[in-house]
View (cartoon, rainbow, N blue to C red):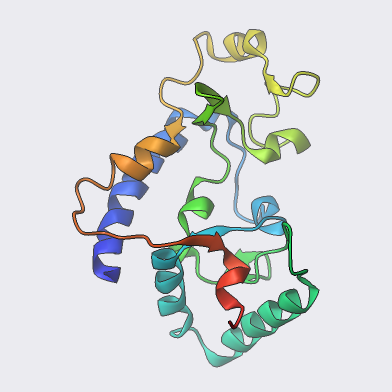
Length: 195
């Protein structure tokens, strides 16, 4: 299944490369920026976790120990119920220890996306727009939405031709990779809790 997932990632990465290119006027991601890795739950499917851990066992022992300690410390802090926002345990010295094996959520951080809100198609800006990063120049903090006037001033056009679409990624881009099964989705830390 992991080989099939790697084929899927090739399709996804090509799609996301186009999305980042189309949105580059508003993307401020650069090496060393780890805001998206500092606070989150990081939802991973069973398949994504298997892929991540397949890479983990190939890391040098010292790096594995550091990550295990990070996970252990986080599990001690985690409450039984409710959201637990935390720093990703795979973030070491300002870099992802398993960048090539990162999950879909990590691959899409920073992009504006189409999403369903109350049955309507809506544009969702990345959380970092609220703190002066991606899309911050058109984020209107009063309304919580895109300031279309500012957007048109910068681009001279309507909203991004193809903000990435979560539903499209989940349904349409899997069609070329038959037989792929992602399994249950959980916050990353929940995969490390012994039952």
